[in-house]
Length: 241
Image (cartoon, rainbow, N blue to C red; front, side, top):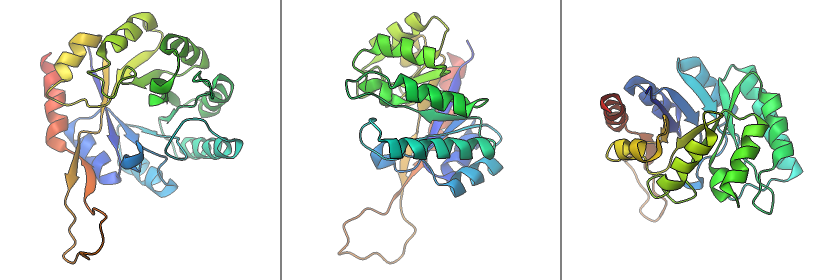
């Protein structure tokens, strides 16, 4: 089986590190503390100019839930139009109705708007009320993959549901485990789920280079980065599996 490794990069340096380490695709985000929101146009353009591997910016106008207003939806449309204009390979979306079902009508419009870019449905799936109904809805919408932790905090915890989703999908859509994926568990996760694509930020905290720090300010100044060695180890584990 050929495995695909997607890295969630929260800045340009992490995206470049991931490419150097052998990643197959970048999910480009900002705001790791919120689980990832839409990067700026400047970051998207810079990443597209620098990366040779596939680039999928997340289209998520804010953190929190996945129930969007009409104004927020309009922002998502504009962000997708921009990603298409600068040559991204795809985008990452996700939206729910108040009852926990997939917002099929508006998501389908985003997929249509994104074409010919690919579309991943992100971990909004993990907040869906019925994962198997959600699976069928997302297939019907036309997405090419679902990022999921199996409706648990980490993919290893949700491995049983992920395995069921892979079987139910039956090659109609890719089921991509993500959340807590590391070199230490990637083989076990592959064995438990039968998945062929995996998602991780391989994150580490890089200390700030500031020489002066105001001791009265409480905010941490470290930067979330993708760990090159961790990505290489994951690729090595998958290659040997």
